[in-house]
Image (tube, rainbow, N blue to C red; front, side, top):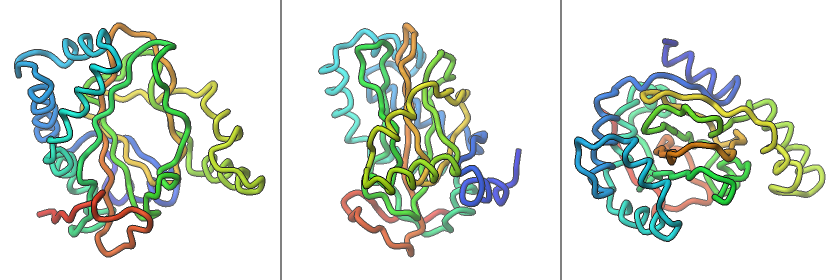
Length: 236
């Protein structure tokens, strides 16, 4: 495993993102167990049982499940703590973290919503923010999440700006012929807010479930986001 300094260099100065093993997997497993319980399942039921159930649910039922997760306020802290040494290397001990971590459900099939290519700055995220994204299971299907390198992302964004566009056809066309990033359970991808990413449709009998959280040094400006989106958090 690369050192935390090497990971920081990759995320900030080189490719803009990095996949690594979650250092405190016990914490992350706890996060998954609590999530399964909040979804109304017994702790001893497997994540794949939940994935199969989600894949058969109507969109309205999935939305209701996501609303139930709004009370899962401790998810952000657990996610950050599972990678605390890497987070400290990137931002120090005194943080601003997303108030509620996002739990992402992606359902298989052409009729389901796909996530168009985007970068975090488009939604008012500070340029000093980092994103941590990890699946609750192996990404073993033929589709999934893809990330463009920092160099490719910058070139695409600058080209759009030259034409006075934001998230126009130049970026939208980036969703085609992309090769998804294959992650195993226990791995996390951390990236900066300039990285273009999205997902493609996938063929599976199971839904894809992941968790993501945004964080930054508390002494850096938060730009357009406000304190309703973020909360203070100190690492040990």
